[in-house]
Length: 422
Image (cartoon, rainbow, N blue to C red; front, side, top):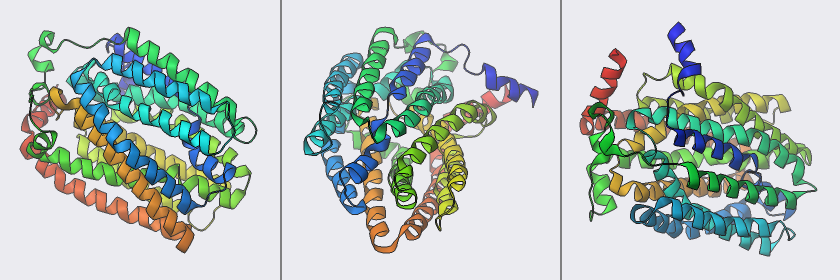
């Protein structure tokens, strides 16, 4: 017990300097990340669109982002990842900042979509770079620390964004673009890729070191069926998870009017605060739990959290909901990213990451469409019931996938057993 408590404070010690740079970059980026969480409110409060219309706009944008993700993944596997990151991030930042000089309307949305397009093209290269800058055995800690940095910045950024929303939205765009560029420069200059050939034998993982050049990505995934199944689960998870930035702000606006954006900003900051406090704790205390059970617990928690806010509760109840939702988010995160990184060959990291991104988009937009129509036709309670049912389906699929994964990747389970004995 004492060892577990001590590990909460010491577990991030000894990681490579690149991982600490990624942590700092995440903090900087998300201190200015005001806009994406507020997008639904921009479309509803600033432009007057209904829930269904907003979902249709989001779906149309997602269709455009799908080929961008595929292209980004192929480029990440073929060219220098740092060059891809700085090129696409620079283009994204230019259009982001341009949004700060115009009023909410069609032109702003066009610039915003272009910025998001290049940000999505950069995504697979960034995810692959995190993997290449870390040892296989460190992945839980690496992704945990990266996630912690994301939320440390977001905790402050979301609250500030909520306060800027009504009267200073343009300033939010300018700050967001500037912080993104600063973090990009940090990553490109200071993050170094690990030479796997210099690692000790026990530090290597044969499943990700294998090269399968010239092999179709889907053929790679068919051989790793548990990864393919889990990608379907992640799509379903995105269906549920995306509602915290879609259905939740709409619900708050419906219940509390102009106070809705401010409350949502503070709820988002509370989300970041919980992540900061509990990510190290849960990473340490769940270190012996396998990846898939973590994902199962996480999905169950953040889907069932929507039951808490049914029937138009008082404001404080939303903080209870966010607490349950965030604990689920944390547990899911420290299981999901390591799961994929250890089972995908280095030759296909970028492409698999891009397909993961597509799955998240399909799940997120599909969720917005389904929930948006449900809200307009049947109300919020029916929409929240759909999310809970989706969570149950996801948990059942993961339970099945545990057996599949053990059969396909036995050495990973042998390795974890050896770590537990040590």
